[in-house]
Structure formats: C-alpha cells, structure tokens
Image 1 (cartoon, helix red, strand yellow):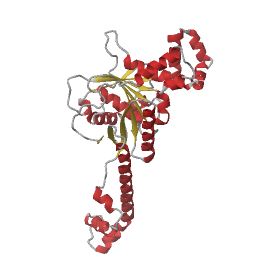
Image 2 (cartoon, one colour; image 1 turned 180 degrees about the vertical axis):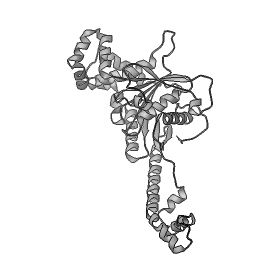
Image 3 (tube, one colour; image 1 turned 45 degrees about the vertical axis):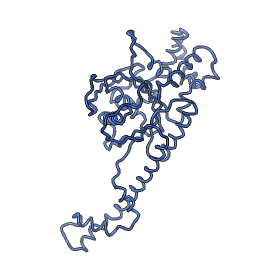
Length: 357
C-alpha cells in the first residue's frame, strides 16, 4: 500500500536487516535525488551511511552543494531526527559519507590488489589500456563498481563493528540495471576461474542476499511506470531482491473528485457568475459589464481545469498499476521551489515517516 506525503504516524522501517540499498529508475525520475534522501533518512537515527555514485556524473556533489567528489570516501553531511522534523531518538546525529567511483582508478586498484602491478598499472593507464579493457569487457567494469559497494557493505573496523550501517548505491537506469547487477552472467564468457570470477561470485552473494534491496523510482506517468513494471520483472527473473517503489514528484490534487467529474460538463455560465461574485468584474455591479470583464478569463480557466482533470485521471490509472505490483510504495511530493539541500532533508523526512528507512 502506498504511503502518501505528510503521513505523520511513526512506523517501523520496511527494510529491517537490509544493508545495501540499490536505487534505480528511468532517467529523469529523480533517482539520484531520492538515493541521497534515502541515505539521509537511514542515517537520521545515529547511523553511518555510505552513498555511492557509479555513473561519473557528480550528481551527489551537486545535490549537496559541494566540490566534485574524489575517488575516496568523504563525509558530506550529518543528520538527526530533529533536523527532519521528527521526534528525537536516543541516539545522536548520524553521518552520510559519499564515494564517486572512478572506473579507471578502481581497475588500477584491482590490478594492484590481485596482481601487484604497481607502477606497471600506471603505465597501462598511460597507454589507454584501462579504457580499452572496460570498453571491450563492460562486465569487468560492472564487477568493479558493484564490488566496491558490496565490499563497503561488509567491511568491518578493527574492533569488529561494521564500518557502515547501510550503503546506498545510485545505480544506472532501469534499462540496464539487471545487466549491471547480474555480474556473474556478464563475466561468464570472460573468466571462469581466477580473481575476476571469484570477485563476481562474492559480489553476487551479497546482491542476492537478504542484506540487499533494489528500489525503483518512478513518476505517475505511463512510460516511467511501464519501465518500472518491466524492471521488476527482469529483477525477479534474475532472482535479484526487489525492494520498494518510490513515486517521485507527486502533485497534490487541486480539484476534488466531484470537481474533476464535473469538468466535462458545460459550466461556462456558472464559472462566469462565480468570478463576478468573487469581485473579478471590478466595482461595477452591472451584469453586462461584469460579464465583459470576466469573459477573457473563462476559456483559459476552463482549459486548465480540463488539463488538470486529465492529469488526475492519468495519475489515478498509473497509481493503480503501481499498486498492482504489491510492493511497499512511497510517494514523495513535488517541491515547487526545486530540490536544494533543505528540500533534500524534507524528502528524507518523508521517506522516514513512510517507513522506507
């Protein structure tokens, strides 16, 4: 069942035990924004969360208003329940760290770790081998990217405690998500033994475990919803753990159900009379002058009402399609002022209230 924006009741999170949250969605749905908001929500109870970007777009840095992220884990925010407008908990503020994975540097790190290439690895970088290898064998690139997320998920400090309470990965769009995550299949033709094969198997053990959930972001529009439906079918076919659906940019209805149903009728005279009674005809009370004053407003207002009614009906149909997936669903509001840092915390609060974190 969908939870709607502003739902106030505190509830237990839906993803207890999940430590790797993979966030994807059709391009333009706001998946990076909601991945960042989810990371804040997960950290608000005093935890430490790592937010990972794999596409090289520096979207995380832009959202948080900071300089481009290097290839290292760096603290970018602290967050508490009070900052999200929620009742204070027993723990202090949590922390969000970020990592923008550089494929080239990740491969050099991998070559040093497994093959001890050292300076030879840097020489390969200079002659363009790294770009060649990740282009010709994209499965290797995906093993490196997912491998970093899985390693962070299970990493422990010297005292035996997990380094991060949760990891959130801003993954590629749904069109290539399953291929990106299903690294075993991707590298099967490249390596059946050796470090790459071993790492792919280790990655899949994490990705297919109860510690992982793959969440999809959508809009209440036909193409994003259909891509979400298709993406979930592909994830299930690959036996990857499906998480929840985050419905982004939800606009509050301006007209109630009765008004929407009435839009198709001929209400021109009623609208004209209502505008006159509201004083839009000026100070004059002469019926002809009032009508002449409000006449230019009628067609634009009625057209906007029809467009709104069509949108409400479309969103109702798309919401029904999302609900048929029978997955936890979270609705995030359209922020009219855009998503600045304050808006990001507001979205985090909504995810927290609705049980996503």
